[in-house]
Length: 358
Image (cartoon, rainbow, N blue to C red; front, side, top):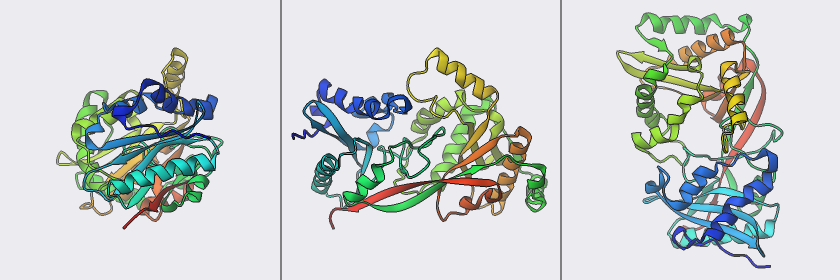
């Protein structure tokens, strides 16, 4: 058996790049959710975030067939190396071989811990899904069921756990008047609960950026990006949002809280957008069957505002009559209890780490 390490970006030839990019299609077949455009940009160093880090791609092959792959991402002034873009056959020998090479490379670069899966940035994709592999929703990390076990057999341990709450429809009986009174109290205090419009989208996106980079600063794997990079990453949301389900809370023209939910397009937004895909996306956007609550935050200086925002969103979910998903919540955070009375099921995820030096 021969394993070939994929060389650093500058040494990578077209054939090896094709091997790297081709593996997910063979593994997932009709359930493919590969963002090949992002992968190519990362490999070529032309992604909007590429200037923030250095990458070292790896692929293990048996003969001419790729069997596993990943990218090691390195940030300056960080003792961790980040392993992402991981895909593999259920081949422990090959995965051990590849991740051992990754560990040696990271140690040579004076990193003491490997963390992942993290696709170069938390603003791209990170975490393994641990259960409920029969379905997916928009924005959810996708992986094959055996990936976590492969990593654990290679010496990785869970470092952080996450949960997505699947929520039933909100009924009139679910309106909690205690929280409704908190919501109304904030309105009386001069807070405005609004939805953006296509015309105001980029202005509000900038406001979200300035608040989000403060609120997310303690997230595992977080690295600050600038406002232009943030716009590059999330500007395309303009075309898939139902603006009624995007809620912003302002006081004196200052953004104090936000909630961004999108219709659940499942995996329709991945890959090339064909005419048939576009028709399905537009149909769902016009009449969503479910919303994914992807991002929510409130300024620490406004205690109780988070509860008011949660109630505001609950009211809109009641009006829409849709189910929803509270997505990718860090276990142990207060937001895990958000809409607990509506929760009918939970999906679990994890981030892993491996100590490789001192």
